[in-house]
View 1: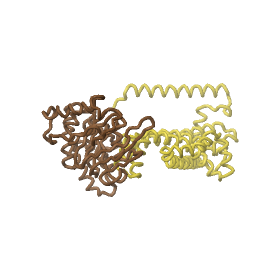
View 2: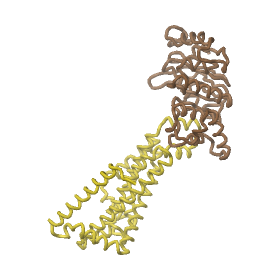
View 3: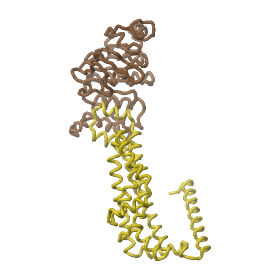
View 4: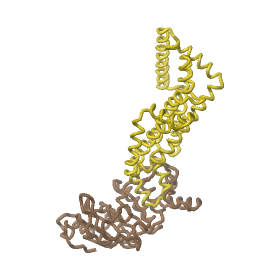
Length: 255
Length: 254
């Protein structure tokens, strides 16, 4: 299921974030969205999840509108219900008609994928930051959807924990394939996880750079020899004034 | 089992406060020298014991308890039912505001007198308790709904969580602490207005009826004994309700 923005315009009271923005995030791939602050990265996720509506243009998930489609969303914070245990938090997003035995089975499987089996009966207040994010990840994968939106879910974590969560995420994604759109500010996360890398310009934002990662996922590691060239191109796109296509008000939309 | 020093200290301070109160009361009654104006603590106790020995007292206590509980339960249910949409919709909140302001600003006695015109004497205390407790409950529910974490609401929306599950699993636990404090205040208020309404409406049985009859006969020790009974009912029910809410919150791990 591709995620498609066609001529989308979105204005907030004090700023026009996009004017006639078009982009296609391909099906079954992990697309990473980078861009300066205020370029509307989270707004794109909120449009695709149906939390926001576009003022003009079309937002499609496959051939469905955000209201009809089902997407999972990993927010910046885990957003677990503090009064429910981890397993109950997962159960919260399961459809009500599902038999009890099936619910238990699904919960156990997803928790195992994120190595949280032992924490099933713990409350969020009893979890470490990393465990809470794993729980949120398990919830994103237990929800029946074809797309997963991620809004900087690894922000603020130290490198070893971040790498461990990225590995966990990759394993869970392999077991439950989805089209992923991943918003980040972090170059390392972008290069480790992204199959397709999109860079947004200054607002009103356009996609001013689109790269396909030459190294397949699974063979990537921090400091990979293929990374510096990608990094150089992305940095150039993010540096105001260095890349004419990515400056404010540039007319070109390459994607 | 040993009792910790701070608990012992707290109990000691409580006992000292009570002793001071009884001392001042006793001194006051001696100074007045008339049990019609200010009966002594022991006279009041004797009267209370005499009162509790009769069946009528327990029936009156039960009747008041029933009325207070009914009025409170009605206001609790209505407060929850209307508080949720009022918390979610500023328009509905605006629509309700004038009614709540009128109820809030009208003197209790005026409400009791109007209710006396409209209802049977048995119903008057229930109606008044409902009306007085309702704004307190709904106000707290609206405040609680306003404090619900919007991030969690967005999460539930994205994950297509149904309305029923959203209310029971997200809104209700978020609002529970607000409901608990609102209900506790409303419960205390309910007892006070039920007894006041009984004094004026004079149902066959009730603490208020007992109070009024004792006052007419100038049996001040009995007035004090009935007052102590009202106080006891209020403290016991509030205590039980607080325990219930605490248990509910603990069970949900909040």
